[in-house]
Length: 183
Image (cartoon, rainbow, N blue to C red):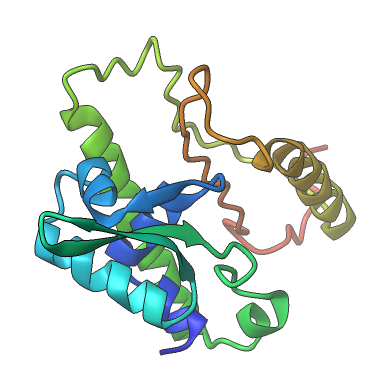
């Protein structure tokens, strides 16, 4: 299975999210992070990600007669490059977006199901803003957002940090204006 196929599954994408930040986790620890997913499903998908080279085994230890493996995400393998993204069909984009939204919904529901969930205190946001942008302005905005995100993507897990998901979604809501409606 290639990287695209591996990443285009809601459970595998959630495992990739859980493993981010240089974490090394056992499959049992991943199960604890995804309490709404059956253990058998998590074990199967961790195995697929490891077989596909997206997860690497960092260590192995015998625990009660079984081998417990600690895995780490191979971040350089867990990406879909620009050329691959540019080569997919409109229907593939539709499928990718649906999987991304299903994954996001599952993650949000898992958050809300926690006893400690407090959307106000946790600064949860899901706003949408309509922006009128030229192609150059859009490219500049994307660059600025990328710079801000990259400056924090190297953060490692710590006692002071909580893993957050940020899902910027940008697409034209309509075609370019043919009239000067704003004047």
